[in-house]
Length: 372
Ligand code: CO8
Image 1 (cartoon, rainbow, N blue to C red):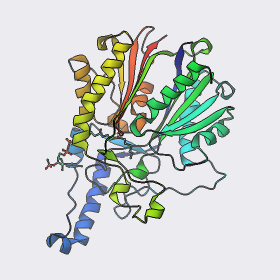
Image 2 (image 1 turned 135 degrees about the vertical axis):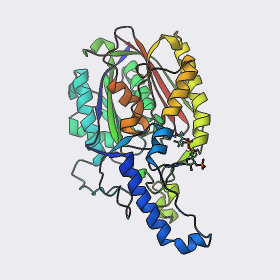
Image 3 (image 1 turned 180 degrees about the vertical axis):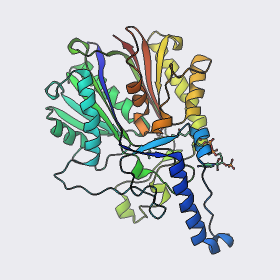
């Protein structure tokens, strides 16, 4: 039984933050910091905070702005993190709200009603709590029967969840699965760190997978193959977790937030991703030149250009490998699916494409698909 992607949804918050706004707030924070600790800095006991620049950010990453679920607090040099109110237990949680916004669009695109969905997977880089699962909250709110569960695989959370949904539909354990990626990254961004303060944005994506025989969507894609790979690396890491309470460590310390060795990640992940994709495309009986569109992970424009060159022997055009980094920044696992959401409807029957994530773990996940 063939499995298809029959609907996709993209929801972004109303608030966005430009590089210029972000840099102004970071630089104000750095100046305050350097003034406050001038004596120690001058004595060589503390390092001065370097200044950031909007030009550097755009050139090094391709990012011009990012969305923020809550903007308040992020740009305050005395706070440097969003202000999120804690919601009552009987109120929809932040991430469930984001997830539902994207899920409703995906359901509509797939021409599906909640009673036709058998499972919900919420998969992202962080969930705001361990239990009850955000997926079960979403399932309840949308009136879906069956079951739901959460998954965490950082940058590859979305693709790995699509793989699980594919297996469930192929095995017949679910008629249709709703996969949602509410990437609420801003609470984990270290806005006080010049090297990473610009990288991430908030967004939610959702995707419906179902049997081809039940599909009545205008834009559907048969899944020709799925492939996953992981290889342990500490080059992208966050030590935030439920043990923080008992290890008596500072929950605000830099190691409890996203941090990375960006240069090493770049050097190690690009060749891995290009090889993985080429192997996967070949295993489906195609060559890279048969691929009409590449919906690649969106972490850094230079990474995508390099991987594109390795795949095609030349730089892919924006039509072949769309970039959404300028507007969205890195959204953890959602990037390749934002690209898919924004540019798939022009494909024609028989066109093939690749959705691929690469990042923390390291983890790489891909799907080769064909428009039906
Ligand atoms: N403004 C001005 N100058 C800067 C800034 C800044 N903001 N930042 C760095 N510089 C300076 C550096 O200090 C350095 O100066 P010098 O040459 O004097 O030492 C110079 O600019 C060059 O710095 P880099 O070598 O660091 O610059 P790069 O060109 O390598 O670019 C990048 C840095 C953009 C980080 C790049 O290395 C990169 O993108 N690498 C890939 C990283 C990547 O893809 N990471 C994936 C992370 S996402 C992920 O895995 C998901 C995790 C889960 C989600 C987390 C959600 C919070």
